Length: 419
Ligand code: ASP
Ligand code: MG
Image (cartoon, rainbow, N blue to C red; front, side, top):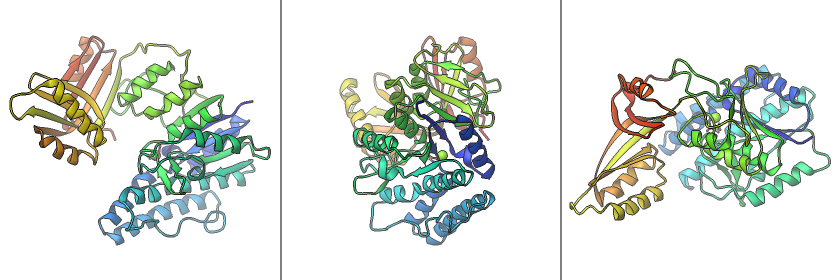
């Protein structure tokens, strides 16, 4: 039988009960399994704060935060009957070197969330009598050194990972990290936040897996965020192309880069609830049902609407467009929507740390204004009635509609807040 890849997100392993639940899901799988695990709970965010504090010279706060993270893992270990120090030795010092670029430090520190979670899961499963091996992705998944958004070298990685998998004495279960890889020089890298799904897909591709399953805290792929829309509908079957469109328009359900590696090898992707492992969940596959026949609501939060106006009234749209997008691309902004008129161009972008510098540069060429605290709502499969309802009671900054798709840039204070 071929290997299956299971990916467990942070919420599924946030405490000892989560790890025990993982064990029962893994046991039920039987057969060969590649288990990809994220950092426990909100550990990645906490590690980001450690880096921020150190960067700001706030060493005491950094250390407090670090100790909290270690304590949290130690508590989970103890509850699982593992001995900190002997079963697993946790990192003692924060691997932060002020001589190095911040983003390089970020990757060395933030990658530890996955190292810790996978060590705990692997040792726990081993102690429960399962045949398990822990794999260290920084040594196996080769990337370049684009810190925080490292690009995977698929050829090298596939060869290494396949060789490890085809070894005669390999146990039936491998536990490893999502989200992280390493350079040829042995430095840890990260693939971009929420990147564990992507790792699972890559491993599925390299190993020609029978299937990849993402275990989540929702019943499967829903047509809307249950925290934001009252009546959600489970979409049991999707085609790859529909899943790609959904994730690129900002659906939080799977990382956008996840689908391609699976589609290339026609490997089905399941999204299932870890709280109800027997449930069917959603299946994304070549023979999926499409197009999706229910309206789909996708929120993309923390958006910024940047409007550029010509400085000298000689606004030539074509020329300006290429100039604007060259700047936007170079500053790594992620554009969610574009709207132009004879004299202005507006872009809606993710409000990331790259934004201020990009705006500075755009200001050299254009009159620039912007609005922040915005969200972008995309409704696919909309009807005039659905659109009316969506617009009611919300402050709409910009709207773009085609026959079936509506996209609304909405002020955040007029959006219901997810808990
Ligand atoms: N732990 C990482 C993050 O929270 C990767 C992941 O969960 O997919 O971004
Ligand atoms: Mg996570």
